[in-house]
Amino acid sequence: MSTDTVQFFVSYTGVKLPLRLVTAIAPEQLSNRNTFIRGRFNAAGALTGFEKVVYGEIELTHRYDYHPNGTLRRAEIVMLDEDPVTLDFDETGAAVAGRDGA
Image (cartoon, rainbow, N blue to C red):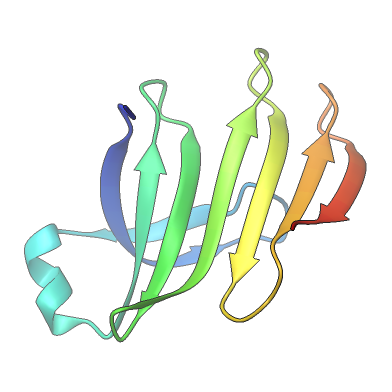
């Protein structure tokens, strides 16, 4: 069972993974929004993943796993109607492999 904390955001930013979630919003504000980001954070506060929700449908999903030193180890990215993509990184954060998911 996951112990991740869920928080909601207006958007995300960045070109390097993991992306950064910006402009936090309260859960009670979701009914007034067509698009929002549902972010999941581990006990250390690291982003473990997020879903971009557009008109009630998940359009984009990112899942992140980290090395013990805190650098990104793996990113799994799923876009609506596309094959999943998995990217692996070494302990320095350098990309070591990318593969299409099955």
